[in-house]
Length: 160
Image (cartoon, rainbow, N blue to C red; front, side, top):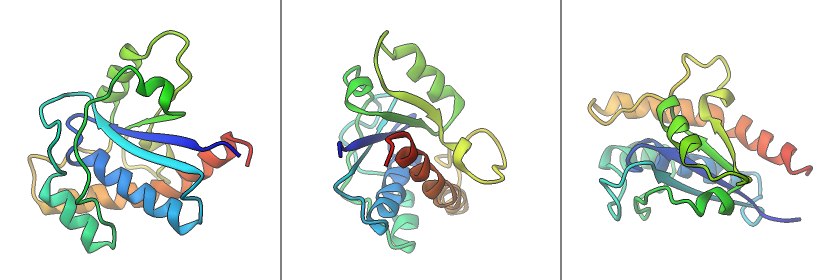
């Protein structure tokens, strides 16, 4: 079966999307699908390209048994719309930006992450950048709640 690819998208690729990448990869691995689902993350902006994730994202991930310390921020590029089957945005602003940048005919499915969080408290994964560690813990909880349902949707869409 062909590998399915999922790209998580936020603004700077140092807080939410690297954490989403790590949480989702852990779920993929837990289900024994590591060779079948490729996972990455990017930002719509270029401010942090090449930087590691925010130390608070690294800490909350580590506290929950997920290592994201080796990730490096990158910017969404036009090739991502063909390289990835799914582009999962952390919020409506980044979803709109991705839709504006998506070339005509590109096959990537653009979706909001919060569509997969049961009883979602809102439409956006809040940006914890300007807050404290509690905001990062809240983001982690949202991502952990939605990772399984999102993976279910990814698997169902590929016909597995």
